[in-house]
Length: 105
Length: 199
Image: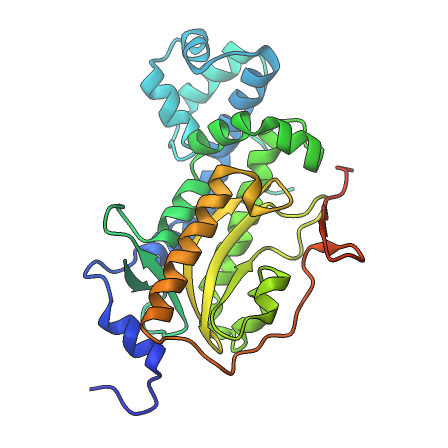
């Protein structure tokens, strides 16, 4: 039972609350806690995106150039792929550029 | 349309949950803003708006700036339980809403963005002092929300939510908010672009 201080608006929201709670907070905390390696993963994806724009390449053409499947390219471009160093090296060789930006500047 | 608390244990920030979607609007918004596949397609599709209105040429820079701003906004939202005055973060959406005495469409953004104005928007409805319902958000690359289908859709979502709340008598008659000028307006009251060329 809510006390009398609960406003009409809050009572309405509680009465019309979804059975499935928000996962925003949990997901946001995960992003914050994994910020450093996510930044590295994103820097690889951003390098590929820059290359695609510069060379006017489609996703299919880029996947072919990297010798990966379109599905794996999509995973790379999600910005959340936890790469092995071997995978990063393969991408760098294919593009001829460094992918990893320094985390601490 | 249902609602969820965005931060557990707090009554001040809620989000709309549409039954046909897999999560609430705030959760979906930040998933989208963190998904480079989505951002790549979005900025490719809207490259003219990006280049003409923000003078950002590279999709890479647009995505990077989106990540930076989304991160700031996310931290702001996570910090809301420690911010007593949410009204200072959400500002009136338009001059028309400044005159409204019922619900007000609001938006939050990263106010300290350097280099160019932030294009990220979190849209919310203020139901009473320091109580907001997030209805969605957008990457807004044009002066008004009516200019593009994806921002117009956000406007419609806000209106749907507002209508539901109004029809249930949920609004604060005393919640008049002073007009705070986020966009630049000319002397006739028409919005003008607040963007600056990239340095």
